[in-house]
Length: 245
Image 1 (cartoon, one colour):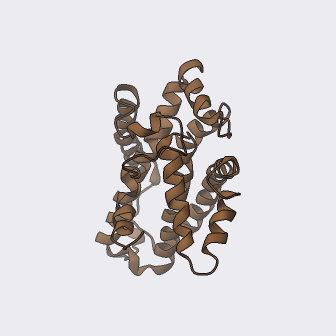
Image 2 (cartoon, rainbow, N blue to C red; image 1 turned 60 degrees about the vertical axis):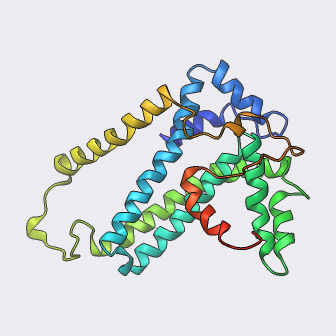
Image 3 (cartoon, rainbow, N blue to C red; image 1 turned 180 degrees about the horizontal axis):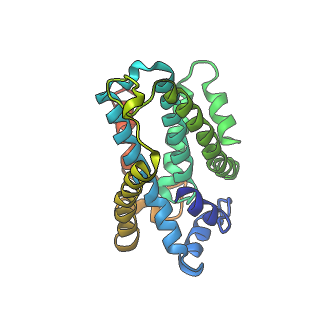
């Protein structure tokens, strides 16, 4: 759903600081079913992370971290997903988009010697502005292809040991065909995630959104509380535990 809705949104989005906010508004108001596509995409990110965190939890429970190659690729995948979600959150160019981008990119200034240069290189100037938005849009479009490639690597390492047995002991005598047994199970899992997503997108699409992000970005007005989406709160808590950052 994220790929399909993302492609449809990209056809109507304008990566320009003066037009980004109004282009998202135009999508929701004037494009046929644009409101639904946008709501599915925005809330789909949250459901994506719900699946990811369940998957990580299962990995901890079954000791999947002992399979180092699979686990390390999984960590890289998580970081790529977080980067994709972050740059995507900046694109609507609301208040929280702008100030979130400013705060997070400024964290790179903590790197000794090259920090400030790195920040200005990421911005494409001396503050979060038009070049930043343009490159964030490009990254948001390109990173999913990297994620797809990493997923194949992740699965390749996984299939070296197998994942159907929590004990990690492969046994051919107990194997069953993928279809219809696992395909039916996977379809049920898909429905269990898609029905709540559709319900959220149709009945309460702004439940997980920040009210500040319904205001166009204003570099002269800092919101009183700059906080990330719920799926980044663990990283935000780690960040707040560090003095002066």
